[in-house]
Length: 193
Figure 1 (cartoon, rainbow, N blue to C red):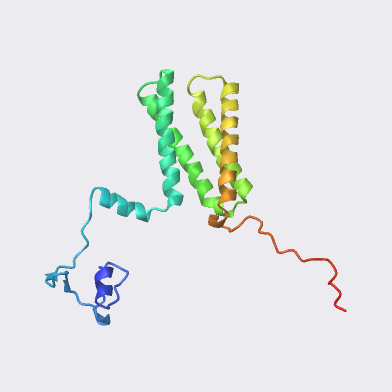
Figure 2 (cartoon, rainbow, N blue to C red):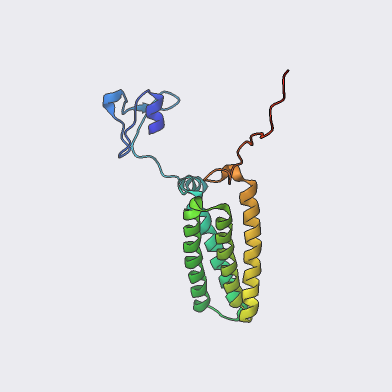
């Protein structure tokens, strides 16, 4: 509706999807062929077009932790099935993994713009390593082995995150990390006799 109003040189109202007629908008819009077209509520799209439109409204700061948590919850269900847990308890483990890792991911994503690069990489490493260490222990592994696995995977995630954050400094929310100032020369000027 906003697109139609702009095409006719009018301004569309932001509330309720109506067009303000006092600014020169017409309630009777025309399509490309020039025939009148009804301008009621916009049609809802279904299928891929509807999902693509909805995906444009959800910021990546929210969508990525939720999608990652969903994948981790499904992996947790798979991991508990390999141990022999079936049905409801496996689904509860998966639901708990989804909720906890999703909440932690959203918290890290929300506060990452206020963190230093190293702190942000540590936060991602802790969440990743802790999650995988806990999930590894669900398969019946020993606690020490699970802790070592979680610590190793957390260290790998720390290194990868630090590398990504350091090589993509321009896209960081707080700008470059410790930008260097131009150095002044402390040498004496050359004599011009």
